Amino acid sequence: MNNNYNIKVYNSLTNKIEDFKTIKEGEVSMYVCGPTVYDHQHIGNARPVVFFDTVKRFLKYIGYNVKHVSNFTDIDDKIILSAQKEGVKEEEISSRYMQAFIDANVALNCEMDVIRPQVTKTIPEIVSFINDLVKTNHAYVSGDDVYFRVQSDDKYGCLSNQKLDELEVGARIDINSGKEDPRDFTLWKKTSDTGRKWDSCFGAGRPGWHTECVVMIHKILGDQIDIHGGGIDLKFPHHENEIAQNYSLCKNTLANYWIHNARLDLKGEKMSKSLGNVIWIKDIVKEYHPMALRLCLLSNHYRQTIQYQSDMIKQMEQEYYKIEKLFISLYRKLELSYNLKEGNVLPIMNEFLNEMAYDFNTANAIAKLYDLMKIINTHLRDKNITISSLQDDYKTLKDMLYVLGINVDIKPLNSDELKLVNDWLDARNNKDFDKADILRNKITELGIRL
Image 1 (cartoon, rainbow, N blue to C red):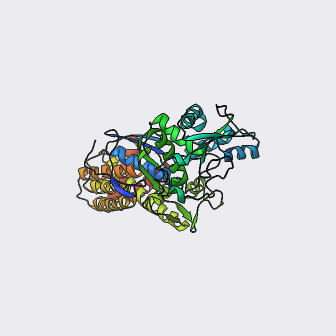
Image 2: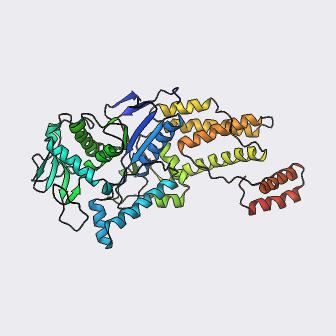
Image 3: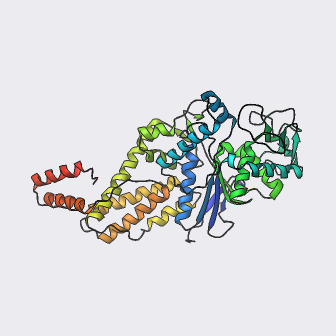
């Protein structure tokens, strides 16, 4: 465990930068709200996925054991509607888009060590949790539905900094005559449609969205965790309502640190499936290198809104190709000299990690990556540079790219390929250009990248 980095985090709950202290020494429990799987994911949806993957990578790199949970909401009105339109079961829709989400994560080089609970596999725990809220008078049954009694929580509004008497009944808060208070939110709802439903002590129905996440957190991580993350759009009412339910039963705010990333907007507007102004991840990674999108998302501080433009992704693709070219050049230099092994990290690695430690500033960390690239380019041009110096460069570059999640695909050379490339280098150095051209053609035919 490396204790040299004083991690500071902007906590949305207190609206200030705080020292990061975990509940258990050396361990981090982190929950990030996952997708409702009724369609493909757009590039705005990719921002929390990529950002929190990078947070996890950094914490792991400096020695923390990170337990990362991100759910699938695999039952929802939108899923049911999609299933009805296609004439298939809801499970087919949710399975299809869960796989599409995983495919997008793989393309963006997100680590797969994520626990992914599903709402449909958590129903008994959700019903039990709601029943506990009813028994303690924090929730009530009205007809065939169950609602959370917002008035019962004197801390309600602590995350969004809204006072209860100032809350307005708006588009995000259902208006229902069965409620004691229009601000109360649904925990369980009776359904009369043909969609999937479950029997419960409240009647056949489905759980409310706000209850699902808090119960999955309880089931896997406990009633109090280190980090709860998600997009800023979830801050109210979703995350506010999670806190309300947890505080009512457990007397804590569920997470010690609430971290929210800003949006990625398109032409000054929120990117939204309902508005139809989306760019799908699956399409962008076909047109551009997937790492261009990852770089694009990380080149801005996570609390800064990104105004997406097509020239932005083009520029990031060029930046990625510079990284790729340098990494391959350094890798082959060491490989061809039979010295492909890692040395020690350079001092600039500490500067990089300190940028990450101060509120996960990926933009500044990438600036340190570019500084390292200048150092390595200088070393590669220096005929007197030592192999050990290049090994230190390699270790440092590899580690920075790991933390940022920037992947460079490179195939190691086998013994025959090593001999072929070294023979080509010898021919070129001996100015035997005819032989060099022949060998170069063979190298190209084999798809060897130098």
